[in-house]
Length: 440
Image (cartoon, rainbow, N blue to C red; front, side, top):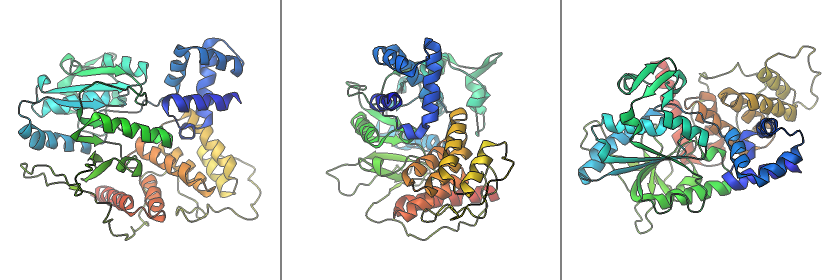
């Protein structure tokens, strides 16, 4: 079937797990490209697509999700600032810090790194930032350095006053910052990706794993392991910490930061710490797989802070529970709510999980950044027995909203039910900090 072949080609080329976007989103992207090419038959378009590298790239452009903003998950930038000032600089007083941002999307992340380093007192001659993305459109926008309000969220905006000039078209980044970032269009999964480049001291690799199939995830980790220096740090997104990373990297324990270093085969201790020259900066400890945290459970009765609507009483969130599939479902109501998500929830309550999932996927094909929709789809998939796909949905919700209470709770319960107590403990701590911040 042509649609299966298109998904297979995308999987091979960019490692995309079609389930993470949904068949509706891929079909929508294909139909948009068909309209541009002026063809009405998908088989005809498929033949054009196979023979045209330009059309292959154009469809890839339609499938990527450029959702990012400046200083996203700011704890990682603060962690890096202290690492640079109190560990790296004292041991490399004349060195050049090499950083990689991949995927860099429309540039907010690598520019945030540059701003952080400049604010920390480094000069542009003290660091090099390479920023890579598969999307040419995203790279072109990044090079322009022109951003709208959507790129500035959730952080004091003093840096915007220092490094941007407001124009009728948006906020224009200072040339002094733009010149510190070297943008490269490339595919992380290509065998010779950045081959021959000097090793990097810092790699930001955030919010891509959740879109990759398992084999592509492992390949990505191999590439990053090759590119990172023996003492370098790898930063990932809050939804991506897990076994696929810890196969080659070891986690550093630090609040709201997901940083790793290489596992040293000759070093059985796997220890790492930051020099505690900063009185406010305590040494970091590595998570030891051999001694997992206590499996004590977190109180799940707290009120969610990111809920699209109150959950029906029949719904359960524990991974070992069913999703309230009644043996004899009642007849559907005469009036169906206008909201697709309310409609999907109602179908799920009636036990019509396949229909509910289809409604969610159709909605997400048009609203790809709605975290609440991913949470609901995850609940439906879990009820249908698709645990892995449900986990991916909740990870994606956290990618879009790092402090999404319901998504965090679902992942916590899922990790605990699978016996993954290390990551369950980390999630529990995040939820506790979230609730504490909400109560302040």
